[in-house]
Length: 246
Length: 288
Image 1: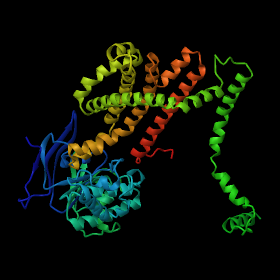
Image 2: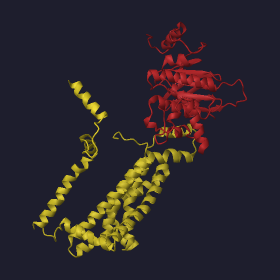
Image 3: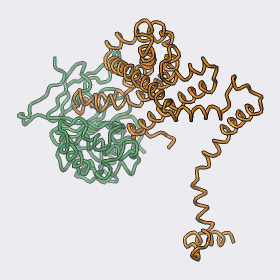
Image 4: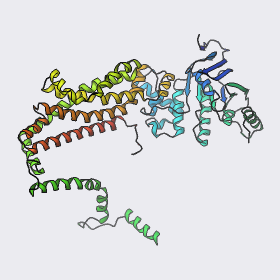
């Protein structure tokens, strides 16, 4: 049985990401229990939930890092992932980290790395060691490393979770800019409801391994957080998660 | 008041008063020179110099019999004598050659074993138990066997070094490989890194700091093994000097030999430290 059904690009109707009745057990523990969702191409999906709700596991299933216990996940095209920890190899310079895994070598390898570093605004740090980077810089390098393979699906596992509030806003703008330019599909796992509502075209609320709620956000970007709709959506998500909204 | 004082000092620094040609250098310049001088080295040298002076004085005053412990001046004189003929260089070179050969042999074995048992579970199960058993035996105790197997000349000397070197390097290389964050393996998978790239860009550089620690430990054991090996049947090398001293009851020869061993050991240690600095520029310690 193939756990991940890779759709061919020929099927135009095929969603970029899909999950059908996905169940995932780790031993006795059921982490995902019948999750179904689908993301059309070029859209941003935010998966929101508390720690341990299974949202990271769902992303890892899409990435092919785990296999489903039952059900199926579908990914159309090639995926790249950025983790919450930037996961840079400390013994490789920034540009070498970005180029890690690329099947090309020499000048071409370097040129490609510098080009994506330029896109995330870090070309000047290409020769730096990862230990000298700030948290935001590290995440931008991780983003560049995900982009260098020109992915059609970008998986982001709480990539801004460990950043300060100001850096986070800058990263949001950067991500939206890259998304508009490249048009990839994004699945963003986050515990930050405001972040989800600011960035996403559709939101999935996960709790105890089930989909508690899911809705689309047709509003154009940039979005005003003081907007009444934004406030209602915020209350809706927090209500589903059982968190009192302030 | 305080402000005014600070101000005047500051302005003096920025605009030193012009001095007449031929006049003595200003106090300001010599102060800089004094501050730059490594006083710490001077302070650290005081105790060793004092000890050597006491040792010398004790011999001159007749408190210590030169046949029990030769004075530093006599050790120095012997050193100068042997240097003049070039004999000492031959001995140093012989010893160095033995250590390097032993290191090369033992080191190669350790690297192969460490990499194999670090990279595969099967390799670990095949290699680790016998090596742990061998480690339980004192490596220097194998000397009689090595004499029989490899001969009493170069064989036992190089062999002892080689055997002593294997374990510390092996265990640290193995631990270094196993200590690599498994999340990096996951990353390599997501980035589509080839097996070769995983090895050359993740596993080997990740294991290098630990392997270099192993190399330093191995070096210490290498010199210790050499001392024992050269003591068995001294034919050239620093051990020959020591044996000569023992046979002729000349403690200055023995002391000279020990000092030479120490200097060579320290030099090689410094070389490995330099290697660490060059190979691990990314590895910033919290102590800069």
